[in-house]
Image 1 (cartoon, rainbow, N blue to C red):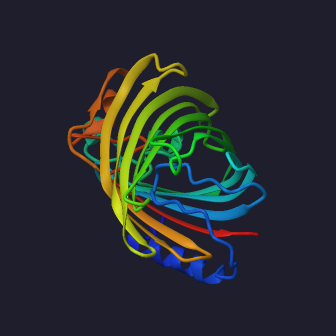
Image 2: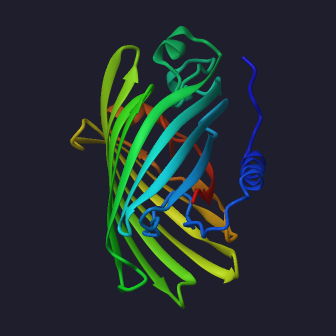
Length: 307
């Protein structure tokens, strides 16, 4: 099957096109300074915002692998401290000769990775490509303490997802501190997730715990940049019973905001040194963790207010 060769430049172009098309509102948009870290900058009561996210995961142990994930979101401020949101999720997976551990696949690498059905890997097919809607998500964020008025902002987050490839429950503790007249933002998310992966009629039980940390500094009006990191831990079972993988991802972020729209671009790179345990042992090769992970992760987010 034909492989689509797209990368970070395509992501940025897509985001800029969206920003241009929807440059019409004169209300102040809530901003997302980070790629993957949630902050406590919520929509005020009665205000709504549209947000489009596009993520590309690219590069595995061998062969070619690209996974695009799109999330189209509407956020709404129920109160000044409580925000609800709904997502429509879509995906595209392209894989060719990219088995996660070539030592387990023989002389000719087969095709695997997140979004590639097990029957494709078992059949020895050399390539696979699929595009479709993945399902939907709901999101609730409650801000307990505001980082504008408190030394440390605190919030809680809950997101259930029902999808074609997986069902999930995600929980986050949101922490944020602002410094230097709010030009410097330090943020952290403690993330726990329970997943039900759908594969060939079977429901696979997995869970994870992540620590996301980052910093964003506004160097000049409208433009901020910084770093963020992900300390990732996968487990077998819904209740984090048996560890399977550990990995660290680090990379930069850039955020630009106008009065009525904003765009954020970020990149995370998987550092060498990832480890696999127990049932996940076959998903490590070349000193990195594969399975649902890649060497590079890119994300673009565009937001603008609706009222």
